[in-house]
Amino acid sequence: MAVSIRQIHPHFVGEVSGLDLRKPLTPDEAREVEAAMDRYAVLVFHDQDIDDEQQLRFAANFGPRENRAGGTVTRSEDYRLSSGLADVGNLGKDGKPLPKDHRTHLFNLGNCLWHSDSSFRPVPAKFSLLSARVVNPTGGNTEFADMRAAYDALDDATKAEIEDMICEHSLMYSRGALGFLDYSEDEKRMFKPVLQRLVRTHPVHGRKSLYLSSHAGGIVGMSAPEARVLLRDLNEHATQPEFVHVHKWKLHDLVMWDNRQTMHRVRRYDQSQPRDMRRATVAGDAPTVARQAAE
Ligand code: OGA
Ligand code: MN
Image 1: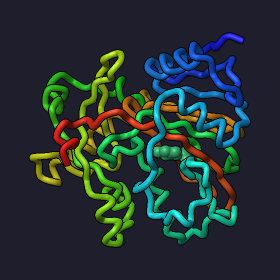
Image 2 (image 1 turned 120 degrees about the horizontal axis):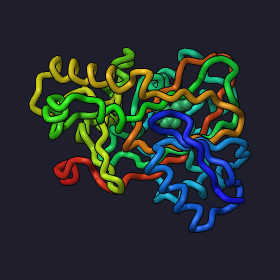
Image 3 (image 1 turned 180 degrees about the vertical axis):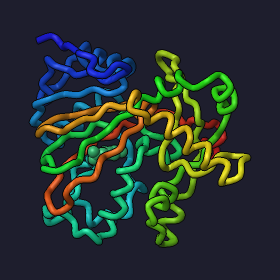
Image 4 (image 1 turned 60 degrees about the vertical axis):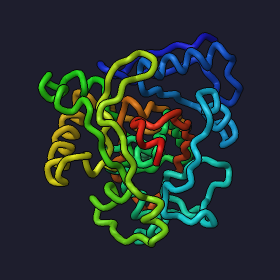
């Protein structure tokens, strides 16, 4: 069956049919999906009852896997998943929802803030692929914002002002915004800020996008309040309804997004009920700031 894609938002997001992700893709199919990612930035696949291995194999079509070390406060011996997928639902090792005061749960609430995955890493993520294994009955929609369309809609003066700006990103900024402030010395070292350009250019089609994320907490050469006011304004602009798509999860949906061209967030959900969401992350290929590479 041929792959077909229907755009479901005026700016971005394609809904894909004609692929069974339990089976390996042909090279042609993999190229088609990658080209669709460049164009739509978010792709939605329904009815994909896949296991972890199949999810990782699908992700491997688009590049090497990102090393997940350093992105969480959960100790590796407490990981629920051993497959290499990131565990982004609310379950503990015992398969039950984490208690409301659990440190991992409190830290994971950072996903409710608009962000781009791994912008806190020196080489940030390319694609993320999220599979819904158990859908929470209340809330838990994931929202996406098209950062190319948001960039295009800026006025020329703002575009010129921000063109060469460089931001500092750290997990301590996004979590700090929620009042999560206690870190061990090891965590502080792990979450040391990294540099990212504020405006990125897509390597294939050359469109520019605003590279924002709740992990961004400073701009090089600017005072903290001035930087944060500018970042707030840009975030407010970029997440207006016009640029946002809301994904309401159905069991076995798989949604993949390009972190270089979009932001996303999950909405609040019922923490007493399970939500099992598993993410494969495709690594980026270079830092966005040349001098970051030397650090
Ligand atoms: C992620 C993420 C949102 C969600 O997987 O990177 O932010 O819906 N998840 O759980
Ligand atoms: Mn995320």
